[in-house]
Image (cartoon, rainbow, N blue to C red):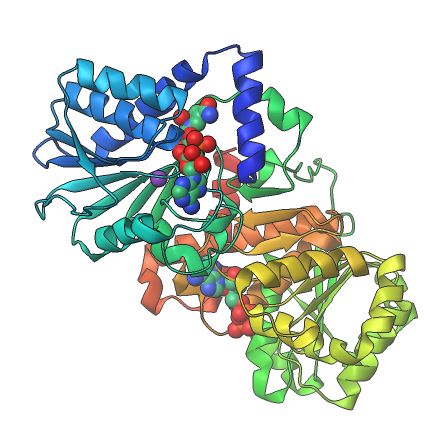
Length: 504
Ligand SMILES: NC(=O)C1=CN([C@@H]2O[C@H](COP(=O)(O)OP(=O)(O)OC[C@H]3O[C@@H](n4cnc5c(N)ncnc54)[C@H](O)[C@@H]3O)[C@@H](O)[C@H]2O)[C@@H](O)CC1
Ligand SMILES: Nc1ncnc2c1ncn2[C@@H]1O[C@H](COP(=O)(O)OP(=O)(O)O)[C@@H](O)[C@H]1O
Ligand SMILES: [K+]
């Protein structure tokens, strides 16, 4: 997992590393700049001129060190600096080192603001501001940013695009629109927000060797899940395992016009590792379910509100809502489950819309059993009210998860798994080929199957979301993001499991 820390916490991590490694701050800057340079030369060739835009803080210090290193790699490098003083201590040192190497600096002046001409094939390295931004860029700094953004050049940001507010959304548009952003050590929350995609471009985290002791001492409240086995233990089965010990999942899914949802959720649950999967749905659809998923068992919808059925069949988790319609029958089924279920409950799709009028019983139910909600943004807003942007929506999800003591899986790119303690895991897998009808049903079936096997809600959510995205990536690789369908995601779950187990 890659931690997501605030700008303030990153400063503390820097200071912790300087103290505990120990390392001088100028040497840490040198190491960060070397790491950036290595990444840069792996992608760009010295045939293209490089212009480094360096500010007065440590981000500018990185820029000056990178200029020096790139010159040593044979790049033709120019440095542009707004004339602002004083430079930070380490920035000043790297300024002197650049001059000592024979480097020159094109100064730009506030009063006589004129930006040097930059050839169209030049690469621009943005090292104006980093995580030390303390207020929005205004005046001539904003004018420099606007000018850079008007140029056709490829822009590579050092750590963050200058002007970006790392911990959320930036008001206004005085932010560099980078094509690439090579960021140091940890991900910034801003990268996870769709509104910032045009500023951050393609981002990549570079390990600059900050001291790992800090993460133990101050665990992050948010993280980016690159591999679930770094954050959870998979359930292991011994050779005497049988279908009764692998967990029995009960799905309440499908209605006459949306029976495909039940088919897909069932298929995914069957590929989750669960021993038994029962689908409670309309009897007229049983032949369809059995033709498409011969391993599944069919039951009447009433099984969802039948305690003795659930006890006798040893149901271990229940997932409802995919392909449901919002009618009285389903309201009754959901209310019964909230009031009576003794096993973990997953609530998806239409069942989330029904929840709007059931929040008081949801609150009580969450005191008794683990509950996970799997809304996409529209379902989340319908349930908890509209948010004007993704930062506010995430804050609201954290608030609601804490208040109701449940797990909220807010779906989309970088699906957010919000835990009852307010911690957030962002998922790394998946692609836009999954943004198609039915993908959510596959996730709901898969997650219910994991819950049935005894995964804690947090682990089931993290693992299901990662596997689902990884299966989506495998489907995209095999058939392309256009042609792949939701059922293809379910069919590629075997590749996702292999990927999980062989890359741990
Ligand atoms: N501290 C360390 O040990 C390391 C820091 N590194 C670099 O240091 C950067 C952070 O450096 P700094 O904390 O110096 O911050 P910045 O380089 O982002 O710049 C902060 C400076 O800009 C000024 N400033 C902030 N907002 C402004 C605004 N809106 N308009 C005009 N001036 C403004 C501040 O007063 C301060 O002088 C990171 O992004 C990273 O690039 C790396 O070298 C890795 C190691
Ligand atoms: N751009 C994307 N990148 C990664 N995953 C995506 C993207 N778009 C959608 N997904 C995933 O696809 C699924 C879509 O679910 P949902 O919106 O509920 O679809 P449906 O209701 O049609 O089944 C979610 O798991 C979501 O995270
Ligand atoms: K920058």
